[in-house]
Length: 201
Image 1 (cartoon, rainbow, N blue to C red):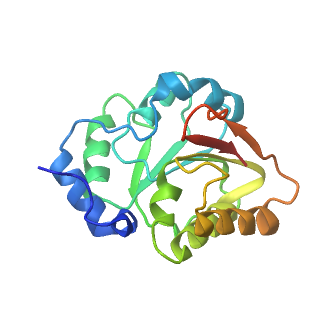
Image 2 (tube, rainbow, N blue to C red):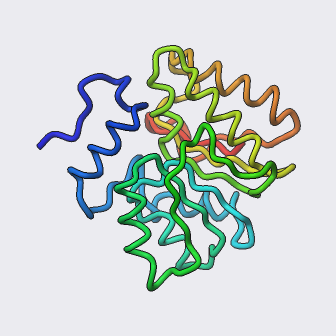
């Protein structure tokens, strides 16, 4: 049974992700890399004491592995009720302090400045698949709002900064100008060796 969307725009659809995780079942799906390939950069930009928002967590094992090495203030959100229910059940006994919530990343309801870091592995790409990029813009505004002053947005995306993905680049530029004028922008993971790219913003 195919898990691929019929069109690229479906990547930004809540209904698509609900179907995806119902079909996928309990087997973890890792977009763009797993903990072993990303841990060096993650530990550099996210500290164990940080309150971390994991945006579009899916059923990735990344948060579980971070928790197991000392990151105990992880708040995971996803649009899919199915995957959130499954992940809460999977972690209830062995990781009682880790939470999974069904939330829209464009309107989370968290108070301003609630988190020291946000981690996004592919979610912005999914949002940017919408033709005009409006969802990506709203998500970036929300992430910027819930990050504390000096907070870090650790972003792993497929599209390189030089690719002609105008809506995504416009949204990122707007985010940097209005939310992060004095923050860190450093390319990580990609290094020009692949089409995947990571940013710490």
